Image (cartoon, rainbow, N blue to C red; front, side):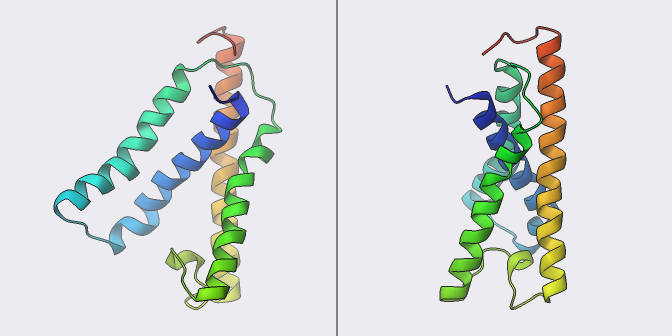
Length: 140
């Protein structure tokens, strides 16, 4: 089983995937047939299932520094996607495409994403600490 800090980072990532898709991407793509089912499972069901699995896992009482670990994934992805876009011109998301956004808009997009990670991460740490304090779901 992954460490509690790794599970926390994954929870943050999958939660932000679901939220970002629902807020910024769902309206720009209209899948049909099997793609619609796959889209629903990937962006709606998977985050909920992972959150349920995370809740049922042991909660050791994460330290607040787990937030820094949770930021490793989005910062690494941001560096990768910006470097790749600079090399081949392809950007996966409109809100991280410097050809479509001004420098200020890019800064806002990045700040919003990182803030979302921090907020989701802080909520998850608080939940983990509360569950650990109550002795719920065992210890890891």
